[in-house]
Length: 520
Image (cartoon, rainbow, N blue to C red):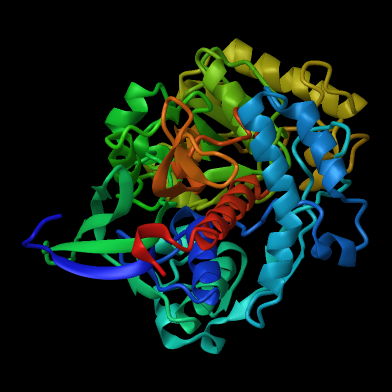
């Protein structure tokens, strides 16, 4: 302990303020524990606040209310069919804990007057046994900003397109903002403290037990936050740290990540590693194609309604309608695909025929060269530097598939996910031709929703050492951990759902250890 640091004592110290962190904080505070949330930035929510708020929490009462053919066993069959190693001892134990606790967690959260969920129609990402038609994900019910306590209304991070522009959030909070707001309401209502602009620098240890964290305050002063029950690290990954990305071979660039700018440098994870925590970085990240912005940033992009994605040789290399993580991984694996050029026409008035957050202004894109425009495909090739013959041949071949309704190269439109966002009028509504000039090409990079490797944890959220023993008093969830899903992204809300479940299980374990750190 640093005798020059101010000391504050709590039962639980939560590092981070995303969906997992605030789930842990809310549940711990509601159970009567004293809680402090440590957030590096001035706002709460991190990347969770940018998200659509989908939570992949199978088998809950919300799916039952909606009459879905969902169940814990159905989700187990689905995961067993798609995961890299679903039967490995560590993975199997965590999967069982996740599937068992997900419906319990939803029931516990909905038991609170300030938390309600509803079904969100959104297809899951693999055609496999156990898949639920139109998905099993749930989301928090929207809430008006003026219905929130003032501290919460002021602290929730706005949507990404507003946050990057320095603009305030909207009057109605939806998706990820609604999730963060509702969890923060519960945590603060139950007495939790929130310290924004506090940066965790190291873990405090006594007798091989994590007993708190060392932080710096907004003015640089040191403070020690002591934890009688435990420290929960749920502070995102290291997507904002170029050196760590390079060390662990994570494709993409810091500027292209969807994390709030200047965040997620991995300090809490590094602090745990210094305490001999085991790690696994093999899953790399949660990826997506990123519409490059005029400032060099990326953009979460999905739901293409028409157009083709071309590599440096002017060729298609994947089904453009794939779920975003699967397309991102195809982009990362394909030589010459970063950057790619997405070629589309004027059917939508010069707007991108897809969903990009943020999209940006087409005029600004054209001025910056992240988009180019031409009356002819040959002119588009000249502007992009792509081989004209290859570009024209790729578009011509794709247009032929639009006429027949069958993408002979990549099967676009064969899966329910492919057609969820589309409305084409041909024989395959995911195949709309590129034939209305002027033509456009938008430059795409590999973006991510966060890194996916990190601290190894057990089925109670306890951080493990290399020998498989747990570090007393130390827990982790969210992208601070190695995902139990490995390289697979099962469906919308899988990152949030797993973060919330293991944060909840961590709190449950803390509550089951009443003698921890001198607590009576």
